[in-house]
Image: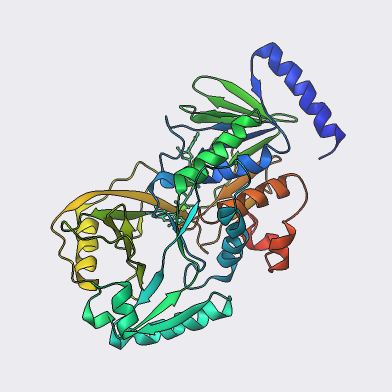
Length: 396
Ligand SMILES: Cc1cc2nc3c(=O)[nH]c(=O)nc-3n(C[C@H](O)[C@H](O)[C@H](O)COP(=O)(O)OP(=O)(O)OC[C@H]3O[C@@H](n4cnc5c(N)ncnc54)[C@H](O)[C@@H]3O)c2cc1C
């Protein structure tokens, strides 16, 4: 972005002061992990304002995840693996002063299958080797030591993936937001965007309380990204918000699950792991929903309890609490990151499905690099990522 752009921004700022419109170099719509990670990288280049419609940033999908860091995703999808790999260093070694606690805590990860489904483990093993994710088979005694309550029918042979961890999502999200504020940016809550209009050099962004002006608007509105685009008369990417349920199961007194692994079933798609002395379990549901404050349904809660009783010798007497969140994705399951081809200065950061926390560092870096006209970051190019794979053009 050259001198002309800076000059027009200064003119915009003068006009804005006169008309009491707030200005920023970058306005981000949505204060979840996507908006926060983008803001963290962009505040190194100019003033950032994040506009969040709820009273709390992270209220929607970001605050409802399972907080898992796992090197593979979606049966070893190579593109998603690049995004995880290029996020890993940040998550393991965040910048000085970013957070007071580790963002990752190691957690063993095992894949299970019954005797008749062992070929699913072999197939996964091959796919993960292809993307250089280390796995090995474990049987008998070691399996029982890892998870003493695993049902007998799964104990024959399991696949173990290296490098998995529990993530501290709050620490990551708050670290991003703190850094934006320290750089002079603003996180404005209860500021739902209701209008977007492009004039010659900038976007005029309307909320109930205030108007804003910026040359670049970043659409990081999660399940609402198509609604935001519609405000600007931009065609949609057809985001699909898919509801996923999580239940927290209380265990009998004296049971200490803290060292147990994260367990993923390769056939049914459910997974569970210890969380604060309880078991966090999801049945792996994917129900298409309108963008909304989704709540869990009884049937999915019941499936969660059923799968836990199938995979282990645990009896589900008490569900402590449950929630649901939206995993927002486009048809090919890959993220959508880049400027819209139809509208100057309108940038999409969408479609993070069930992998948006562990890939946030990479997605934030891609966003800033593309907006600053530098193309993709070199470490991602080196691993084979191309702009086409994540572009808006591939969808429109
Ligand atoms: C059950 C579940 C488990 C998951 N587990 C994992 C996991 O283990 N690991 C992992 O990496 N990922 C996981 N994910 C995925 C991850 O949570 C998401 O990919 C990520 O949180 C998406 O972040 P986001 O910022 O795009 O969306 P959101 O957090 O939903 O943020 C979008 C924000 O935009 C705001 N907004 C919308 N419209 C407007 C408007 N008009 N004006 C202003 N603001 C607006 C919303 O209020 C919202 O806060 C999981 C998801 C679910 C549902």
